[in-house]
Length: 174
Image (cartoon, rainbow, N blue to C red; front, side):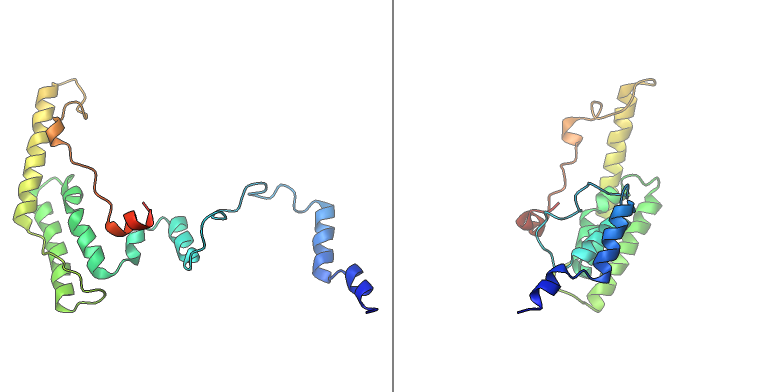
């Protein structure tokens, strides 16, 4: 074809402006120049934009979970949540608020039908009291000027690391 030569030397207006800007040095010193694109080596995910938004805004991935799984996760983390609370009333109020949300979900369930246990405030308060008593005992053993750290706490008092959920282990995340 005789038009092939024309298209080989044809330069669109956009390409011409990009080339002119490069010649003038307008692309020199841009933020992120020379660094690889984030997520370039990750496998393709359908919701890549959602994950990047959550990472950029610092939002936990828990917001993506269905309600019953979110409630179960909160129940599992309840001991950690109440650990630093000062009064028993605060602990009981926190457990009551979570129990109210579980009861509301049980009345009108949505999402997958997963068993969600009702949190029991007496058990949580008893555990909270035990941890406070252990912490107080460690402070008394350490003395007035000594720091209270991991060494002061008995090995039996250490809380094991939380176990990753089965789907995170399966997918190799987190």
